[in-house]
Image 1: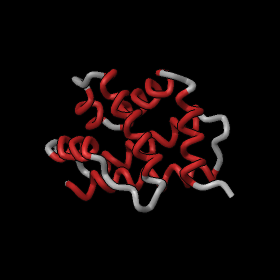
Image 2: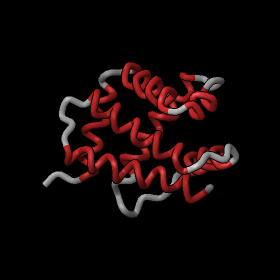
Image 3: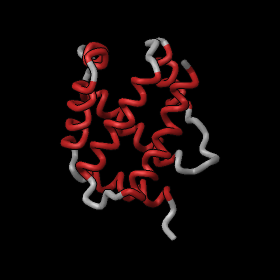
Image 4: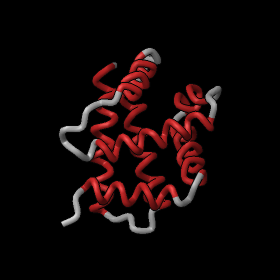
Length: 132
Protein backbone atom coordinates (compact mmCIF):
# COMPACT_ATOMS: atom_id res chain seq x y z
CA UNK A 1 0.00 0.00 0.00
CA UNK A 2 1.27 3.46 -0.90
CA UNK A 3 1.78 5.83 2.02
CA UNK A 4 0.68 9.46 2.10
CA UNK A 5 4.35 10.44 2.12
CA UNK A 6 4.93 8.54 -1.13
CA UNK A 7 1.78 9.98 -2.71
CA UNK A 8 2.66 13.56 -1.80
CA UNK A 9 6.34 13.19 -2.70
CA UNK A 10 5.54 11.71 -6.13
CA UNK A 11 3.02 14.49 -6.73
CA UNK A 12 5.60 17.09 -5.67
CA UNK A 13 8.00 15.68 -8.29
CA UNK A 14 5.30 15.84 -10.98
CA UNK A 15 4.32 19.45 -10.29
CA UNK A 16 7.97 20.50 -10.27
CA UNK A 17 8.28 19.19 -13.82
CA UNK A 18 6.22 22.25 -14.81
CA UNK A 19 8.98 24.50 -13.45
CA UNK A 20 8.04 28.06 -12.69
CA UNK A 21 4.64 27.71 -14.41
CA UNK A 22 3.28 25.94 -11.32
CA UNK A 23 4.57 28.63 -8.98
CA UNK A 24 3.37 31.43 -11.27
CA UNK A 25 -0.09 29.83 -11.37
CA UNK A 26 -0.24 29.58 -7.59
CA UNK A 27 1.03 33.14 -7.05
CA UNK A 28 -1.44 34.66 -9.49
CA UNK A 29 -4.40 32.81 -8.00
CA UNK A 30 -3.33 33.47 -4.41
CA UNK A 31 -2.91 37.20 -4.99
CA UNK A 32 -6.25 37.39 -6.79
CA UNK A 33 -8.09 35.34 -4.15
CA UNK A 34 -8.55 38.22 -1.74
CA UNK A 35 -8.05 41.98 -1.72
CA UNK A 36 -6.18 41.81 1.61
CA UNK A 37 -3.80 39.19 0.24
CA UNK A 38 -3.17 41.31 -2.86
CA UNK A 39 -2.25 44.23 -0.60
CA UNK A 40 0.09 42.08 1.51
CA UNK A 41 1.76 40.63 -1.59
CA UNK A 42 2.07 43.80 -3.69
CA UNK A 43 5.67 44.58 -2.72
CA UNK A 44 7.10 41.10 -2.34
CA UNK A 45 9.87 39.61 -4.41
CA UNK A 46 7.99 37.01 -6.48
CA UNK A 47 11.14 34.96 -7.08
CA UNK A 48 11.83 34.77 -3.36
CA UNK A 49 8.18 33.87 -2.69
CA UNK A 50 8.40 31.06 -5.21
CA UNK A 51 11.53 29.78 -3.51
CA UNK A 52 9.77 29.89 -0.13
CA UNK A 53 6.77 28.07 -1.62
CA UNK A 54 9.05 25.34 -2.93
CA UNK A 55 10.55 24.99 0.55
CA UNK A 56 7.06 24.91 2.06
CA UNK A 57 6.07 22.08 -0.25
CA UNK A 58 9.17 20.19 0.86
CA UNK A 59 8.05 20.68 4.46
CA UNK A 60 4.57 19.48 3.55
CA UNK A 61 6.13 16.27 2.26
CA UNK A 62 8.00 15.93 5.56
CA UNK A 63 4.83 16.59 7.54
CA UNK A 64 3.21 13.50 6.12
CA UNK A 65 5.24 11.80 8.87
CA UNK A 66 3.44 12.13 12.23
CA UNK A 67 6.69 12.63 14.17
CA UNK A 68 8.14 15.33 11.89
CA UNK A 69 9.98 18.11 13.71
CA UNK A 70 9.90 21.78 12.74
CA UNK A 71 13.24 22.68 11.12
CA UNK A 72 14.94 25.85 12.33
CA UNK A 73 14.58 27.70 9.02
CA UNK A 74 10.84 26.96 9.00
CA UNK A 75 10.55 28.29 12.54
CA UNK A 76 12.23 31.51 11.36
CA UNK A 77 9.62 31.82 8.61
CA UNK A 78 6.86 31.22 11.15
CA UNK A 79 8.34 33.98 13.33
CA UNK A 80 8.39 36.42 10.39
CA UNK A 81 4.75 35.65 9.58
CA UNK A 82 3.82 36.06 13.23
CA UNK A 83 4.95 39.69 13.06
CA UNK A 84 2.61 40.27 10.12
CA UNK A 85 -0.51 39.56 12.23
CA UNK A 86 -2.14 37.41 9.56
CA UNK A 87 -5.44 35.82 10.46
CA UNK A 88 -6.39 32.19 9.97
CA UNK A 89 -8.23 32.91 6.72
CA UNK A 90 -4.92 33.89 5.08
CA UNK A 91 -3.53 30.40 5.71
CA UNK A 92 -6.77 28.72 4.68
CA UNK A 93 -6.72 30.62 1.40
CA UNK A 94 -3.05 29.72 0.92
CA UNK A 95 -3.81 26.02 1.47
CA UNK A 96 -6.89 25.92 -0.77
CA UNK A 97 -5.20 27.88 -3.55
CA UNK A 98 -2.23 25.57 -3.35
CA UNK A 99 -4.47 22.50 -3.59
CA UNK A 100 -6.12 23.96 -6.71
CA UNK A 101 -2.71 24.62 -8.26
CA UNK A 102 -1.54 21.11 -7.48
CA UNK A 103 -4.70 19.75 -9.07
CA UNK A 104 -4.09 21.86 -12.17
CA UNK A 105 -0.49 20.68 -12.61
CA UNK A 106 -0.50 17.07 -11.40
CA UNK A 107 -1.98 14.82 -14.09
CA UNK A 108 -2.43 12.04 -11.51
CA UNK A 109 -4.43 14.20 -9.09
CA UNK A 110 -7.40 12.40 -7.53
CA UNK A 111 -9.40 12.43 -4.29
CA UNK A 112 -6.94 10.20 -2.41
CA UNK A 113 -4.04 12.47 -3.38
CA UNK A 114 -6.08 15.56 -2.54
CA UNK A 115 -6.71 14.19 0.96
CA UNK A 116 -3.02 13.33 1.42
CA UNK A 117 -1.92 16.81 0.35
CA UNK A 118 -4.64 18.46 2.43
CA UNK A 119 -3.55 16.63 5.59
CA UNK A 120 0.08 17.59 5.02
CA UNK A 121 -0.76 21.22 4.26
CA UNK A 122 -3.05 21.44 7.30
CA UNK A 123 -0.20 20.29 9.52
CA UNK A 124 1.99 22.95 7.94
CA UNK A 125 -0.51 25.81 8.19
CA UNK A 126 -1.41 24.81 11.75
CA UNK A 127 2.16 25.64 12.75
CA UNK A 128 1.65 29.18 11.49
CA UNK A 129 -1.84 29.56 12.91
CA UNK A 130 -0.89 28.33 16.39
CA UNK A 131 1.99 30.80 16.53
CA UNK A 132 -0.32 33.78 15.90
